[in-house]
Length: 98
Image 1 (cartoon, one colour):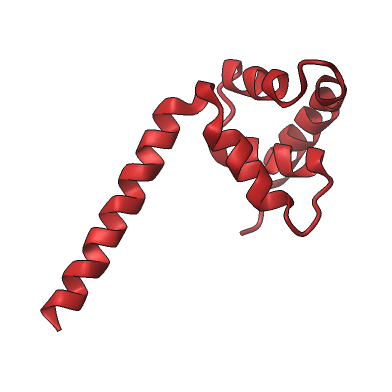
Image 2: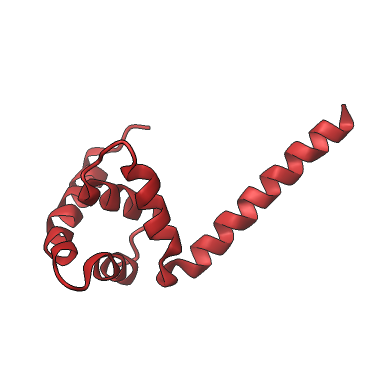
C-alpha cells in the first residue's frame, strides 16, 4: 500500500514530534494520547509507533499491540474485534456450506 506524499509528510512530522515524548517518563502513553487527541487514525498511529520503535522485525506487531491496547483506543479496539469476529463467522459459514 503506497502512501500519498501528504500522508507521508504528516506521519513524518508526528514521528519527529513524538520522539521526545517517547523518551520522557510518560513514554508510549504520552505518544498515544497525543495521537488520540489529534484524531490520528489507528493505522497512522500504528505506522508512527512502528517508526518510533525502530522499525525492526517485530516492531509492526509491537506497534499494533501498543496502539490497540491503549485505553484511549477502546472504540477502535471493539470495532477491530467485531470485524475479526465477522470475518471468522463468514469463513465458518463458507466452510459449513461446502
